[in-house]
Image (cartoon, rainbow, N blue to C red; front, side):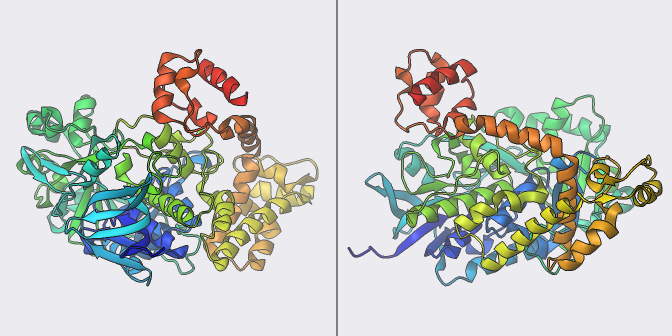
Length: 626
């Protein structure tokens, strides 16, 4: 049968971080793709903070890298500074973060998206989703043009009926200076989907020359950083400094006096804002006894004439923003280039999705990014990548990529989104992962290489790089089984001020001491293995750190693996999509209601649905195993 024209295997709507990842992975898997966006020049735009990574977000970027995504690679091309967060805590929560040159980052995303022959960027606005036989068939543009496809991925960010608030001033827009999108929400609702409203915000941009940096403290990056991508061979960080200043009681007094002008407090904003990235109004209201809040001055690009004021997200009138900030000594002569603002937008509660990010009711339709109620570049990119992979698997009639809470932060995010109520913009944290000790930033390759290999997400060379790192890590762990003489061990222990041994012992026994590092056994372990490897130096160093972590946390790691093994059968037990929960007499009324709405895919997911208690799961498991 002849296909209608113009026909694409996959259509991606929206060119943000989710859309870029989705488009490129589909192309990589051999499909034809049309990326439809209102503004092709804004593809990959960093509309908020000029940074990638952070607490748990850094782990997401590492996982995206192993699964064939571009975020880590482009971060390494554009980074201005790297910093490993949480170094004072256990290695389970170490998280990499990078300040980036957002101009270089955006240009590189656009270059990559513009390069493939089977990826066409189309300027246009989707206003309607067409379906046929219970599946997606294409889209209608505002111009009236119709595009046809096998799979559709919607990644509209904050553009769906977006409304910007600056004090009492309201502007319909998707981002500052870019018009909003109308039609997709209405089309999805007509297909039976439920929508709601959320809110997020962004701080002011300040003219660099108006800041007195002598009254700020310096925040440098790490002296010996590691890149984000496993495949970055040439790496050097300029380590440009950021700066920190603080609000004060005068600032807080000005904001308190003008709180009635904030749309969040007047009731103008209906959508809930992000709990973990609150506005300055929220901070002052919720913590009235605090006399100061930190403000981070981050350059938006190299030699930038403007600074991103992290920590001062606000929707107050511009005059109030200026007055409050000029009360800070370092910002006494402040000049605003762009005020902070709040933006309210439509989203679709993600309980309407499978963990593959395909909708439960319309086959071939995938949603990714802020349309699912999340916030952050990393969360969006991760969802875009997963949606892209699974859209490709749908088109190719292959098994989908299924990630779990046990193997990745991406799996944690997907499970949280599809089983829990999204009442505010979702943000990833290490505390969300119950098995975070297993989900270290430094072992993403060993956790996810099986998926990359199975779904052909990496080249043979890339798979080889990851396998070499895994092999080197294992070789170093094995090398610690070797015993050293009492004399050799005491020579090392004396240098680092550790208690001496009375007899010959394996190196692994000594490495379990908290203050002993694998680098203390450089000549016995590192020199031999590092000389033999062809890995990039940063990966070889990381392999050594990972080997040390495996040894030091061995008991805890085994305990978490045992927990996973015990729950394995429950987590994997499938629940039919049309299962009649209301027919199970012994289930509580709340469980019947919640499970009927969310329709969990497995018994493990049912356990994590809010309002479902252990006795409900016991009853449900009896029915399923019958």
